[in-house]
Amino acid sequence: MNTLSLDVAAIKAEFPLLQRQVYDQPIVYLDSGATSQKPQSVLDAMNQYYAEINANIHRGAYLIAEQATTAVENSRAALARFLGASVAEEIVFTKNATEAVNLVAHSWGRTNLREGDVVLLSTLEHHANIVPWQQLAADQGVEIRWIPITNEGRLDLTDLDALLDGVRLLAVTAASNVTGAMPPLRYLADAVHAVGAKILVDASQWSPHRPTDVAAWDADFVVLTAHKMCGPTGVGALWGRRDLLDAMPPFLGGGSMIQNVTFDGFTPAEVPTRFEAGTQPLAEIIGWHAAITFLEGLGLEAIAAHERDLTAYALRTLTERLGHDLTIHGPSSVEDRGGTLSLAYRDIHPHDLSQVLDQHGVCVRAGHHCTKPLMKVLGVNATTRASLYLYNDEADVDALADALFAAGEFFAF
Amino acid sequence: MAGLEDLYREIILDHYRNPRNRGELEVPPATMAEGFNPLCGDEIQVYVEVRQGIISEVRLGGQGCSISQSSASMMSTAVIGKSTDGARDVMRDFKKMMSIHEDGLDGDATSGQTADRPGASGLGDLEALRGVVKFPVRIKCATLGWNTLDQVLDLLEVE
Ligand SMILES: Cc1ncc(COP(=O)(O)O)c(C=O)c1O
Picture (tube, rainbow over the protein chains, first blue to last red):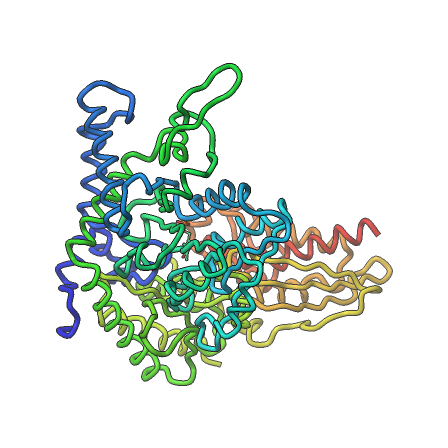
């Protein structure tokens, strides 16, 4: 443990949920890829908002409405800083990453793509970064093309040049929620820009774990979601290059997103308000700010180093303890790899495996992880996924190995 | 607290290890439907052949967890030899067992009985799946084969 650069015991103590027991055992939470747990500071920030400054933003000329407005705009500024964005106006709050992709597909996609244009996706994508493009394809006659993967679950970029022919947009994940692979984003951005196309990065599985720098990626759009990075559910964001956002029509219509409405029509507001129709999830936006403060307090580099060490420990321990009975669908080295471990153990179905693990207090996810095309390429219907985060330690990995072993005994035949 | 032994009764594991009626039937004369569990990606194909109003053969394809596989396996043995109406009766009883009642959740899942119908469900081995209701996310696994059989029976009615 002393090789890891975070004080995990102290960190765990800040997460109320990690104090609880399940089945008379301490909970071993290994499903942060689905959603992370929340530190007390995030819960407090949301409670404090409701208890002290709850008012709708932007319109009330009274103290608490101004305080609420300031708190929300401070959160936008904090998120912009966190992402390495140059101005806060480039941040659009959405419901989650999914809505952010839909916003781009609907607004940018419908304005800029025509029949025969190609949207390039990677085989690693989550349905959130597939289905909105398929909807666009169905409506506009846009072609969807796929970047294949290697045996180790990384992107296979051998034929990238050919794949880029006719491409107007590459939509790619920064980190796979199944194999953990982290594609070379800057390389991809350069290749995409060289053919005059744009790149959208799904940072949902990256930003909780690694320093994010949209400028270093040279990305055009980035989507992310608060609940996977110690923040609340119900809020996410789109970051977009200002010139692109400025040229995009509104996605959802309604209150707040207008400059003027007459009997004959409406004029949309400036960016980012243009894309934020209706009352926003104010408490959640403010809670997200507290999550960002929490992550920056620990340091994203320290979090990354901790997870790299812990992932190396997990790959080593699981392989040593379970040997050939265990398959890990992902890179075997920790280079450009997150702490997401998609497992197959003997031929025990992931549902059965996770059920036995649950009895040991070990929370993992079983299923297709909203990546059905990837499952098809991996040749499975489902995997059992353990995902590591900043509050996990070697004892959690050991508990996983013990529970897998016990499941093997239970289903031995 | 619901334990693993409530879920994984021996008879269930037996049907999982040695699934009955695996395979395919020629369509036609058989009728086939395919079912998916969108949560986990499991899939099943149910083939049914009816002769003189009686289900003469059932075959099962696809893959899934122990609960979906054993439930389908037991289903196949339960409906072979029955009329399509008889099969629907078993299906209705099974789905009733799989619906979550308050007392079903609190009660003793291993008793294999409910108060209103003591031991008389006619479900036989399928009673072993009663414990599944204590694990609500697994109910969809247990009913996958049945919902697919339901589709087959609907197709048969149209024919
Ligand atoms: C890679 C990736 N993209 C997008 C999403 C969607 O996130 P949300 O459901 O919060 O929109 C997820 C979460 O499951 C994910 O893992």
